[in-house]
Amino acid sequence: MKLPLHYNEHDFIPAYHGIATFMGCAHTRNTADADFAIVGVPLDSGAASWRSGTRQGPRSIRENSLQIWGHNRHLNITPKREFKVVDFGDVVLEPINLAEAAENITATTSAILETNTQQLTLGGDHSITHPLLKAHAEKYGPLAVIHIDSHTDTYQNLEYLEHGNPFWLAMRDGYIDPAAYIQVGIRGPQSEPGEIEEAQSIGARVVTIEECFELGMPALAELVRQHVGDRAVYISLDIDGVDPAYAPGTGTPEVGGFTSFQMLWLLRGLTGLNIVGADLVEVNPLYDAGAMTSILAANLAFELLCLMGVSKREN
Image 1 (cartoon, one colour):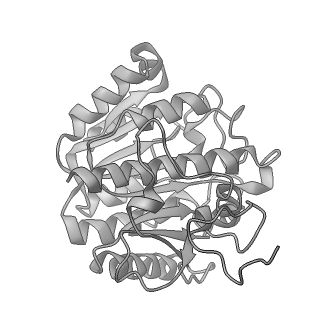
Image 2 (cartoon, one colour):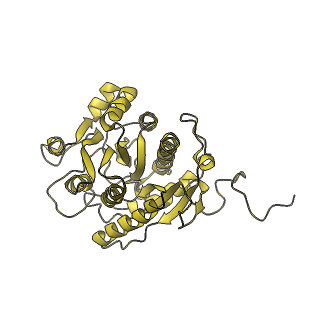
Image 3 (cartoon, one colour):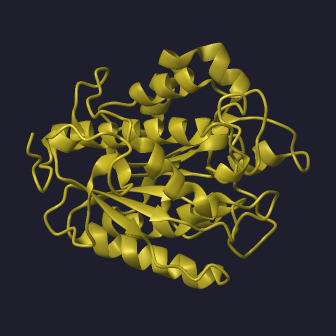
């Protein structure tokens, strides 16, 4: 059997072949004719609370995305066939200078968005969401934000950016529409009383994990949909929103969260929203077991890409 010198994009390629781009997408820094770009931000300089290591997240997610075959039977979409999806690679960063890194994240994202390409970002710690929101808000105006997490990340006791306050700073800076900001899955011990009330005071609709489970996934998804309406929506998914029994590889795990299936169920309930961008953050392979967190993260990133594809198809 004579083998071809090159694969074409519809050939079956074993998951262990080739360079580990997201789902085997072509790697290019040119997004001029792309519909979606996968962008890595290998940064954990903002991980102030406990364990660093999320700089390894984008690479591990990419490696474990190669076994995702490509068709989403729940959303009935095959994004790589319906759209041009590219892997941009990683933002160029100076890891010891978080302020400079944030500027590079915003500049890179803005350049991609200027080509009318939508961006799905793989982190990195949650501090990266602030510069990502800045770039998206500059294009779309103040955003509706769906923030899935175990922590509020709206701590107001610090003026400098870190992974515990990106949403407080984004609200302060006008990147988020305060009437359309919702936090989903908040739980766990708090550093001090009143953290949830503090988030509510700046306009966040906080849905604790207890309320999530009382509602159930379909009703929870509908609550989220009603809250953001038809605005331009940005989704930020912290992997620690999932229980560490299913996603142990994260910097600040909190017990009592969503199962992997519940998280999939929630995301699939968000079809039809006007989603303009998304990120998945806080995957820490240094504390993972059998790559189970990275495998889940890769599948959740695929679901986010599919949601964005459905949104682009319908809007």
